Image 1: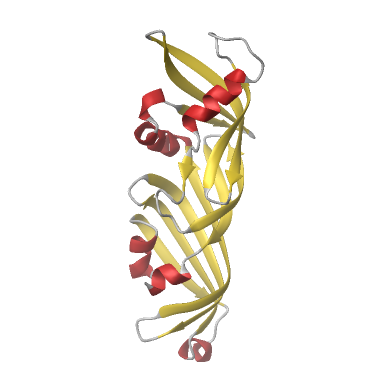
Image 2 (image 1 turned 90 degrees about the vertical axis):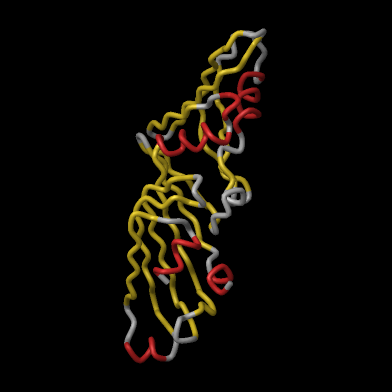
Length: 202
């Protein structure tokens, strides 16, 4: 499994896989009660740097001498992405508006640069992250200071339309679904599940 994780999730500084709460007899019959995967600095599809990853698989069943996964009853995934790593990704994927995000406790600040009448105009917005369909991370603006028009709600939608989705797991082919996101100073922590069975079988 360690050998396949680099292909499945991306190259990493380190992967560590541990089998827990499982007897030798169960391993022989193709069952692991609990598998824990920890990783540092995973470069997801060479696009987004994940600072740390924790994946737990419950009731994993497999077959073969070089095991292929058959099923997993439950998976839990936790990843952390730093502010710097997300900004590096945004510079490549949303280069036109030069977006920059800053994380604060329970709040996100976004800055974009828009060429208004030929002059680069910096726009600031604050808000939060929301998840769409488990695969996309969106910025939901609560307040924006768009100086060239004063119309309620315009500035917030203006910023959202130019940077969303911040990232799309389908685009980087990362086999996971997000369920919740926690904003911490300088980083975000996302919780969800991993869909790895068919990926590893292939």
